[in-house]
Each structure stands twice: as C-alpha cells, then as structure tokens.
Image 1 (cartoon, helix red, strand yellow):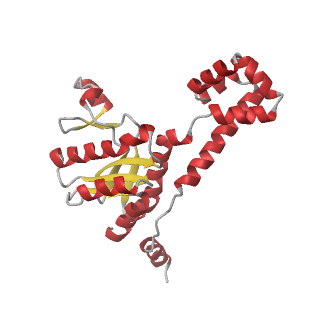
Image 2 (tube, one colour):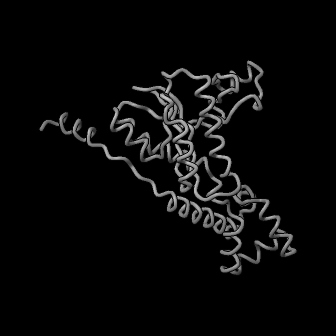
Image 3 (cartoon, rainbow, N blue to C red):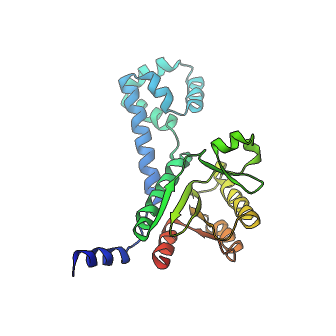
Length: 244
C-alpha cells in the first residue's frame, strides 16, 4: 500500500475521540485547589485574589473573624488548614463552562478536520444572534447600535468547509444553579433557527449531559428540522464520520 493509500485509509477509519467529563472536571478541580495552595505558600496575595472565588473567601473571613493576611499566614504554618481552605475558596470546576466548551469543540475538530470540516472555537463576543434573525459580530452590533438585550446567547463555535454553520455548546452534569438554564437556552436558539435561518446553514446543539430526559426532549422536538442536529460530542463526531 502506498503512503497516500495508508493516509486515506487512516482518515476513512476515523474513530471518535471520547471525553470523560467527570474525570475532566475532577482533574480541573484538583488543579484549581493546588494552584490556590501554591499561591498561599508563595505569599503571592495579588495573584491569589485573582485566582480564588472572592465571594467565598469573604464568607470564610467573616466566619473565622480574621483578615485575609492573618488567615493565609496561619495556613503557611499548617498544611491541613491550607488544604481545607484551598478546597473551599478555589473556583468551582463545574462553573468553568468555557473551558468545557473549548474542549468539546477542539475534540470534535480533531475528527472533523480529517473530513474537510473546520470547527473553530469562538470567544464569548465573536458572533451573536439577534432576536430579529441576524448573526452579527461585536463590531457590527456596536455599529448598528444593537444592545445585548436584543440578542440571544453568543455562538460557541463556527463550522466551515464542506458544510457551514454554527455550534451552541454546553456541558451539563447535575441539576441546579446556572446549569438549569442550558436546556431553556437551547430550546430558544432552536426556535430562532427554525423561524429565521436558511436551511442551507447547519446548526449543532452540542450538549454533553447526564440529564438524559431533558436532552431527549430537545432532541425529539427538533428532530424534523433539516438544519439542526442535537448531539453529544461523541455522536457529533460519528455524524461527521458517517456523512463526510
């Protein structure tokens, strides 16, 4: 078999990359905690205050009736206290959704780019759908004097190549808090797509979740929409492999 044939065969036999979100979040939380502990040890207070959950730190200081300098000083002499405090005031990995979405999109792109489809990760302000049906950049929104209240949530990814379109990406494990809004946001964007967008555009509602019944509700509701697919990161890769 020639080198070209080997490469072609390798591309055609692509298998999806699989992310275990539970492990990803556990490892991120461990790193968050470790970083806080390291900054306490180094007495790097300015950087520490940029890294921690400051609201939770304020709650701790009120409970123990100490200043931050007094508390951090005690932690440097007590490894157990430092470990406990670091775990409490470090940022919650489940609330760092942007990092999850970055990983979702980059993982899917590892597969899609082999099939001639580029999936680009977008910043939170890059492209935003307006309630009147347009998709505009931050510059265009400013030039047209369109406020954030007149828009929906920004897209997380852009698709180009053999197909062109947009991605709404979220990782949702467990219910409660900010995560409860995800399926409502997904439903809203799907209704907007059906109402305003041309069927030649491809929209991916990319949700990795353990809330299967809520996921299935959205998936079933828009199953007949020709330009929408509701998938997790594994099934999106399978869709690309099977169709391109």
